[in-house]
Amino acid sequence: MGIDTCAPDCLVEGNVVDRFSGDAIRATRDGIVVRHNVLTNNFVVKDNVVRVNAYHGVAVYDGQGCSVTGNVCLAQDAASKSKPWVMLGQKRNLAKGNTVRDNRAHSFNFKADAAVTASNNTKIDPDTFRKRQTAALTLINQQFGKLHPVA
Image (cartoon, rainbow, N blue to C red; front, side):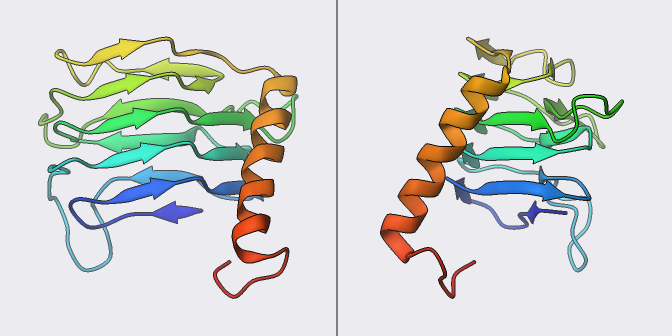
């Protein structure tokens, strides 16, 4: 797992997950200590750059009122059968009222949320991915330096 969030009122922003062998960003709230809880209270996943050979680029399960915006997800290997998506999923049929917009990925699945507000989610292309990755890495390097203890 590249990034796993397990708390309400989270912000996952501006990360780069590159050549990771497992799932990328997964906001399930189903962690090691706390299980079967619901994401609520302004859960935000935005402006992340994810390159993996896995289906879960960005996946929010049972989210309520969450925002997933501006993320880009690209398959590490163009020949891979597993291509990352942006998805609203469910384990307990509780997903509702989420906003998903301005994301780029190989595919999108918002079926879990009948009340989703979705717009401008389009297929990713390698050039767009490279530009977003360069911008994210530049911002991180400016803020923390090329090698920093936060990574």
